[in-house]
Amino acid sequence: MAQRPRTQAVRPTTTYIRGDMVLFRDVERFWLGQPGHTFVGRVERSWTNVHNGKLFYDLVELSGNRPVAGIDPAYMRPLPATDAMHDIDTAPLSETDTGAMTPAAVAWLRQHLAQDSSTLPARP
Image 1 (cartoon, helix red, strand yellow):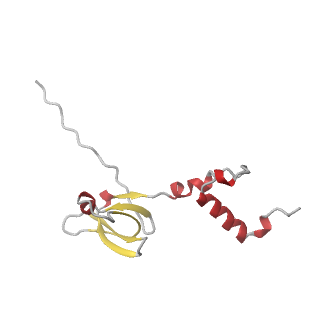
Image 2: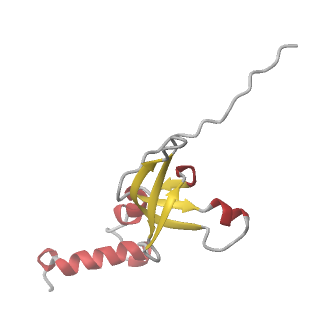
Image 3: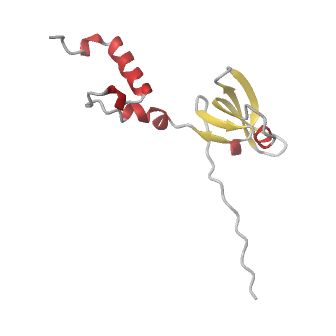
């Protein structure tokens, strides 16, 4: 009987640059059920371990502006701007009911209009 070849899952490699927004999970805290295991961070730098050649990242945890060093990218995921801005980009601006828009879209629209009052329609 022929043996089936073993297959191994290949994880896509993502490279991050300074300023990228990421979601990070501290795997040890996660498996131990400890709080604060997942947070949003901003990439500050990348570096390679001289002993094993593995790439690591240093982040800033945004909720507390706390530096976190030596992050394994296997536990990081990108937070693309398109995802963060989707609700604003797809806001139903033609709707008369602002309840159809998410709070973020309404806040952005109000801020934008307050900054540039020349774009507001004239009041009757």
